[in-house]
Length: 228
Image 1 (cartoon, rainbow, N blue to C red):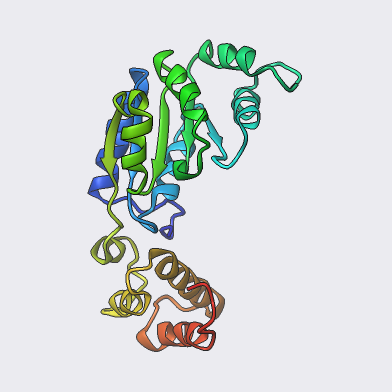
Image 2 (cartoon, rainbow, N blue to C red):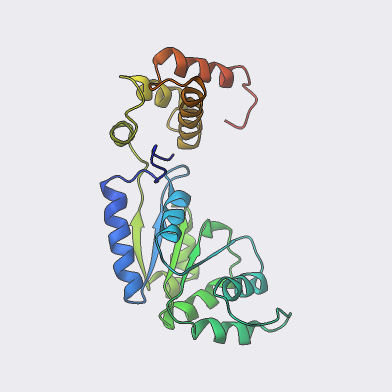
């Protein structure tokens, strides 16, 4: 969810976490952000990337070769990608200056890639990772050397009260009504709110009323077989 000024909504916790991570990046230290599905981990990483850090954001489903070459490519490293060059790519990445690696959905990372992540961390290349809480037992048991080098931050979903502070277009009790329909699913909550904001812009009105929000919600109730 974005504010009307285009910035991702920040509550006090996110502001604090951003400050902590920024400080750790400056020291070459790494961080793990965990949270429930829909808590805003992906949005938070996007905000980190947008805020003047020199970041390489990689796809966790990729192979080792893909991940290594993706980091180098985003770092503007001059090379021709080839197979069976992982050792050379690892050395090149560990020698990069002023680069931060962002990895979302680390639950999907292939186990062997954690050995390379340890090398990044030991080379003081900050690695900022995000995943659901289910990753913790496996990370502690199988990749303890990586886990012991991370600062753990638990991200809570943005509350309705925080949305109300940042979204004055919604009339009284309207956001609570949308949240109740969403049953805590922040992806659905965000999508409905965005559709409401799009509609008032289209209608050239200033506020999202309860009837207007209900009109949007009716569209979701007509399709009970949707992913939501």
